[in-house]
Image (cartoon, rainbow, N blue to C red):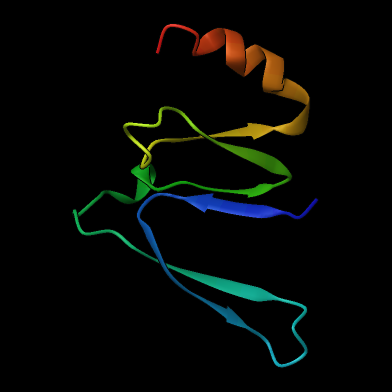
Length: 76
């Protein structure tokens, strides 16, 4: 399992260092947003599409809390 970086906006590019040990993610936000409303999460997470008709909505879940999230979105 790999670590995943999740943030608001669209991922534009990923830049690796020369030794391929570190990555820098570049995101783009088309709508001006105040700094307190921008978030970044990095960790071991699973990614699920919430609905087949809206593939742009994803659920990012930490490995240990999948059951809790399934119960939370049952009526989505």
